[in-house]
Length: 128
Image 1 (cartoon, one colour):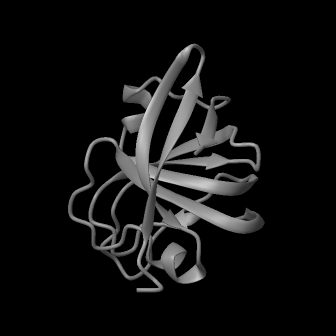
Image 2: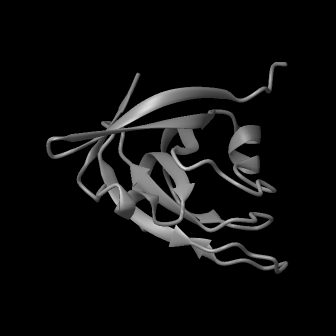
């Protein structure tokens, strides 16, 4: 059970609004590598939080990911620095979605979830 993925509720602050979402926490290399691969459906207000032990630079790819996703890249204070949209890849060679900035966290959700909830770059994520 050591590698069982835990969940946590986070809130995203956008102006006077607060949006809550439940995320699976990918806080080990193994969990980050697997991510949302082979997930056929992601519930509306759920996602995955990628936690990196240090600030990193680089992107994500969608190999073996079955659903389109949006991803937000955050700094160590929880500020959303960049939001990208990613499509599933069924090929052997898949594109990398690179924010071209360094970040400490990333959150993957269903494609368009951030826009639907009026969440944008510059908003803040608070972890419970």
